[in-house]
Image 1 (cartoon, rainbow, N blue to C red):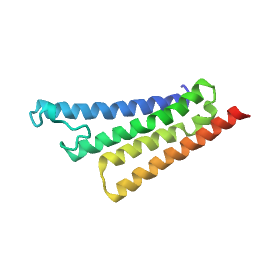
Image 2 (image 1 turned 180 degrees about the vertical axis):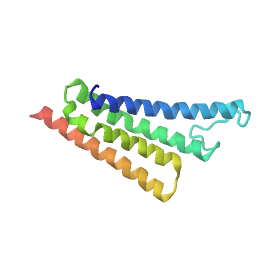
Image 3 (image 1 turned 135 degrees about the horizontal axis):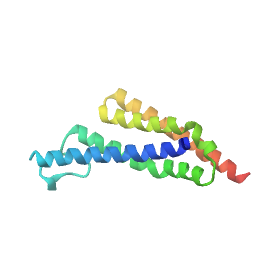
Image 4 (image 1 turned 90 degrees about the vertical axis):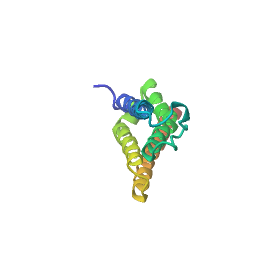
Length: 139
């Protein structure tokens, strides 16, 4: 099997794409079932359903973090420094997925706290990766 960093990067891409496909399947269903006109969707889906609005935000959260976290993984991959990212790659991906799932399930205080906790895990991992990669290249 390949590097954990490759798997995490592919997993992040796959998860983000899955959320997008789910959102679009739901929108198509609303239109085909004649429950909502195709030309009246708001970008945040706020005028459809609370779940679809949370799904939109979960997808947007993935897109917001993708350039940073994907760049760190790609830098490690192209420079042969996956020893930096591999040990925490699966934890990073799991934290991303749990954050999204918490977003999809609820906006309760507990869900928001769970979401933040798993986002914080990703931030800590990202900062760690950044400093470790920088330290490799400034030596």
